[in-house]
Length: 293
Ligand SMILES: NC(=O)c1ccc[n+]([C@@H]2O[C@H](COP(=O)([O-])OP(=O)(O)OC[C@H]3O[C@@H](n4cnc5c(N)ncnc54)[C@H](OP(=O)(O)O)[C@@H]3O)[C@@H](O)[C@H]2O)c1
Ligand SMILES: *[C@@H]1O[C@H](CO)[C@@H](O)[C@H](O)[C@H]1NC(C)=O
Ligand SMILES: *[C@@H]1O[C@H](CO)[C@@H](O)[C@H](O)[C@H]1NC(C)=O
Image (cartoon, rainbow, N blue to C red; front, side, top):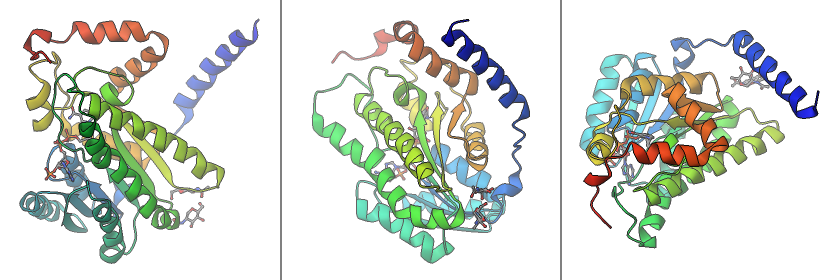
């Protein structure tokens, strides 16, 4: 047998063994009393993550720009059973603010067990205008603030054997798609930053886990409003998506795929047959509904 064939047989056997014997099982108690920051939690997936954590008895510190919304989410978290719930309002285009949120975790929660980075800035859905400033602005909100908060949080996470969760995307974080060029630029950057950081931490015997979330189309108001006229697919529920993110994070998975089969399969297929993935994606778009550039 050739070397590659042997490796492949070994790979299949090993994968099956791993799949059946890796006995880690999620229990909601894993999150009880845990001190957790959730960004972009005034609506969408972040809001749902906050509610699940509240039900599991975590201590949550949430952030976004809209104070009124954050107040409502905090109140609901407390009614759902959060051990504590606080908010800080501000804009993630400001790195001083990004750092302040982490510092406040130290003051308010006395440390940190999990940093869930989930916010994204607003972007237009359409052909790229060619304006590089659009990319620069979105890089600040969607990427540099993630790196800033990570750097600020690492000392606390080292103490707690903690976790970092970065919410990314299948169709802009692993696969290129049209009409979201600035957004896709920021999400691909997350993979580079967090996958490299994971390895650097491991090489230094750190016990901080990093989970990158690869999400397919989810039914948040923002996503449905901006793409449903062009993307001809049924979005998956944000409540279940939020729960899968928490489960994967608690089990310290390196990548969390949701919806699992679709996101995992297309990510693998993209490596082997990118032209086929491009063709498949293009043929499902209602391109006649997209305004010309
Ligand atoms: N929905 C999908 O189909 C989908 C698919 C793949 C991946 N994802 C990923 O999932 C995550 C959540 O998506 P979502 O659909 O739940 O988004 P969303 O509903 O648009 O929520 C975005 C959150 O970020 C906050 N935010 C926006 N601009 C901000 C700024 N400049 N500074 C601070 N906070 C800001 C928003 O609150 P304020 O307006 O109050 O600031 C809101 O809480 C994102 O990372 C996204 O890339 C989503
Ligand atoms: C972190 O993990 C190490 C090794 O398992 C353990 O000795 C230590 O007590 C843990 N610290 C915390 C705060 O859980
Ligand atoms: C890493 O942290 C996890 C979660 O606290 C703990 O279960 C594990 O024993 C730690 N491992 C090492 C090698 O420190």
